[in-house]
Image 1: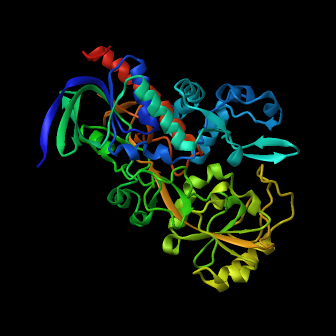
Image 2: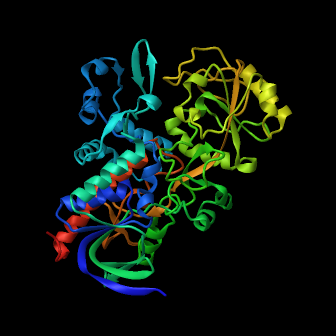
Image 3: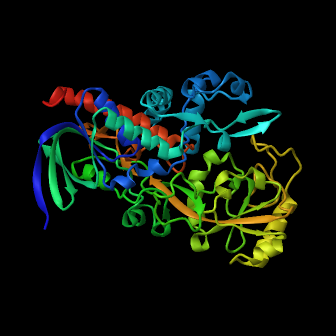
Length: 505
């Protein structure tokens, strides 16, 4: 039997969710003097949302290596002398964002994300988050130096696990209350104002009085029914890469009180992930270990033995978030990344983990014989690809223009014949990270109604914000967006609370 009670001690701000965006919002509001409660749907050992599963790479604008060294202060002069760090300006970031979203990203939100990115990274460092250089995935050694590329040179220490450990530590240090196994179910309003929130906790319905609510509990990628309804029936088969608790609760609660929908409800961030990855994120194996992101050096074939994307269209930072859905469209929702010994040393570390599914053979005929595919067509496609590869200088540190001619789809960059054994096949399927459809939110984190006016006392951050990402996104922008709009939502909620709350310190 479900019982109910009121929680009489009021909070200025209640944050729903406990990932990167949520904790940045909670810390920001607390720093502004608010009494803050965080509601985490999952248990203590499954806290951290999708952020827990990331590899920690975070995209921000910076001027030069000196700007990076302020974020990574333990970098020695000797190390710095061996680094080539191209500038990644605010304009570079904005252009990348608008390019990969086909110009659909809301300009006001896109500019806010970009312009606030460096200051927010600095603020995160002040909160105790440790950043390191992303040597493994975003640099190559050339002529004795490490050359960084792709605008993504920094990651959090110990990946998403480290990020969340440090944010939780900071939240607890400054007196933020965190309730686990507490599922927010309904926003309470009086007139046009948010006055409280209902939640389920261990068989009880609890009402918490509050002046402001920040929704930062993710999108609906963990909800099979919503995936099918909004993105397509085939998405019922997608692996959920992150937390199982992102089931659209916050979106539904906000819409119930008049929030406007926004963004690409038919779209999502999805990637190629190991075919045998867990069906939902495994909190005992964090760190984004199942992804397979070295495909620009491969060719990818489906079960019928046919290629279906230009693997070398761009750096993986700008294609991986959309290629997952292309894999999902293939027969059996599976594809095979094929490599030879020429490029095997270039593959990212996830290809060497014991969790990686791999087939290896000394000849292509032997390799294909190990796979449940149309073997004749598979070998024919590889032969045609090898014959189409053009001369040129192969350079994995830049878009080298070494492509193919006479086949479709082409391979625009990094095309080498697959001819030197041993040969390798990695089966991949589609893993969904988060959905792009969410709420209409302004650049300071206020949730808007159908008239595009703020809903008094309601704010949002992270994946709850619709309108930033369409079709695709630049790698590392999800964590950055969560932090930027989390911090802003916390500040906005605090300003609102000071005007309206009796509990503010």
